[in-house]
Image 1 (cartoon, rainbow, N blue to C red):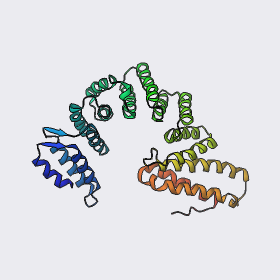
Image 2: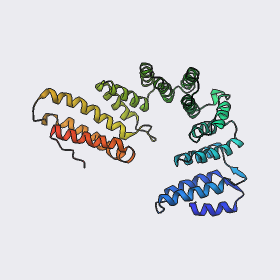
Image 3: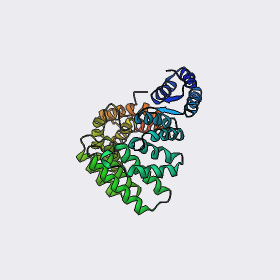
Image 4: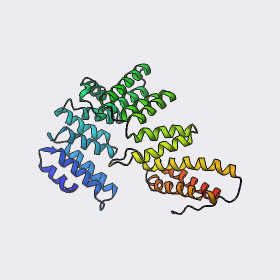
Length: 322
């Protein structure tokens, strides 16, 4: 249903159907004939009108879907409004509770976050999903930044990450969550240990592979980082890719460039044609990275351009994909 049509329909309805609401939001931002300003204006008109309704119809997942779409538009406060409507109907929905503590911390609804976090931790972990574990740990890390006791928060977060792996043993996010806790407390070796455990135990762990490759690269362990990146390139080929392909292939090219530069220094000659195949392999990776970095990571795209210029200058081999 088109956004303007749905706005008129809302005028006539006593309640708000969350499936229709979700569809209307999706249609607004998929309308290529409407400029961004008009899209946002219509979005807020529909939201404002819908939140005035007396009744909200939908499953807990329907409320979750609308909340996610609002958050994607940087409207976490509106996401929380819908989530509260959903929690009035489904007070023990782990998805809605987890969503609220995620979005509520962004828009400073701290009292409600504390209340809903208390409800969530009172629910058996048998009923928790990845979202409940992940967002709860994120919530605790936010509380740490707000001045809560570090030791107490750390222990609660570590316990949750252990339970995450216990109840969802095939999900790499349990390992990633604990790695991020160790990172927060500057425990580099423990962070590496848990990431290495993840890639050893989880068949496909692209996020852990990319994070560990990042660390190895920063430590100068270039060959090891490259091995992880090549595995990540295979593991991340999924219907919903969990890592930035732009950054993945950029880091691959960066690793290979570092290795190549060391070898170029040793050769001490002007003709680098013997390295052409390897330079072209780097350029192939950089071609993949280029579009995504340009669209999503402007600062990295500047570094991408510098790396291409450096390789062209040092090797006398031009980048062929402009």
